[in-house]
Image (tube, rainbow, N blue to C red; front, side, top):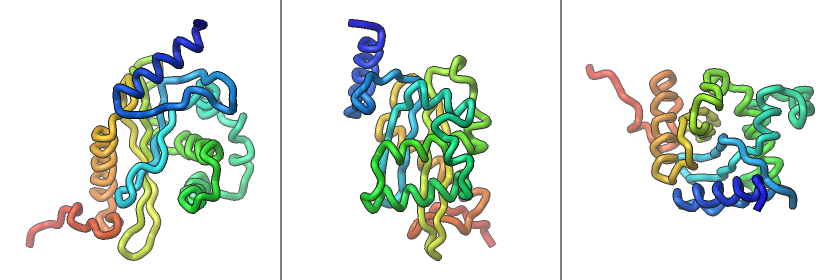
Length: 189
């Protein structure tokens, strides 16, 4: 067994220990993992997508350009791209690899990403992108990151998403997810 096969086996074991079934090849070739995970979740419909970034994706996020050059040169902002990608993916019209590419590009464009500790100083980075619709029909996309050396369990992911929504609502209480106004703290009269 070579080093890449050993890493893939360890990744599969870590994922299985948290309740995930993970694919450790990409496009038929070996998967060279980083310690970075990206999750896409919606409070109403649940987990949409979870992925473990390859080292190449992580390097491209840090450096810019590379596989993200076309996005950088497009007329759309990262937020516009990810909003369209979520809608298209949910409609079954966007392949998961293309969705990953947009999620990774969006992640790297955020203030959340800019504040991350260096990967060399943490066990792993978990970047959670949460989207929701407000009662008045506005689409919201928010991000949060946490650190752990293994994939987040479903319970940990739900807790992270809940924390993320609460932080967002503390700054913008009128942007609660549809039907979830009870999450907003109102001042007492």
